[in-house]
Length: 226
Image 1 (cartoon, rainbow, N blue to C red):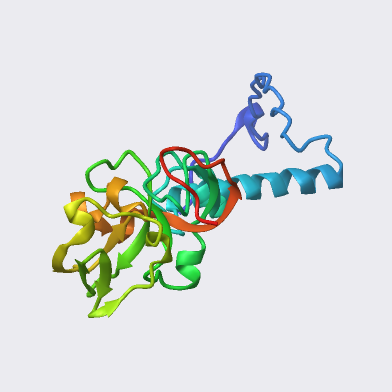
Image 2: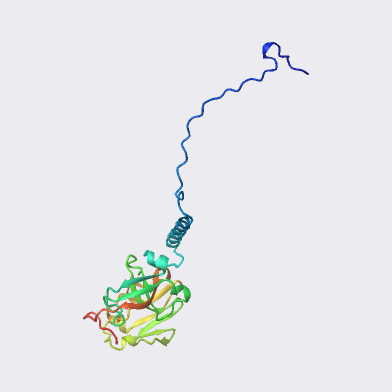
């Protein structure tokens, strides 16, 4: 079926399209990489990757340290200054020690390890003490000697001490619950440790003491063992 015929002077003439003026569009802003050489672009990309990795390590905390120190979370190591005599004569106030969050992941914590941790009674503080019992261990103190699972611990740092406090001489046997540690200060008469505030949580361990970076002179608060 045909449509109506077009006659007259418009017959066979195509309609002329109507053109509208285009508004001016500003050019896009230059990218940060504009004008960079290939080497500069590579360096810029590397810095972005490193920064993202550092931020990711800090936020995800894959080492599981209880510290908010970026050095512990990202590098796995940080120096700490000993503030008290609770670990004398092994450590005295003013000593600077290197604490590692890496070694607890390379091997399990063991009795005798010196660790930095946050005590349950003062979670904002970092203490340093020696592990005397792991989860499942039975710990007691008799005549100043520490026994773990009915075996005496080798504690040469006690040889120079005259243990006078009752809690340094005797402690009834206790069992360390799962996910916990029983810690003691080497300076038994002058230490705040698990005898006072209970068990330290494994998740609150900052790291293991690796070495002493600086040894302070011995003081009246605690002598140093040679």
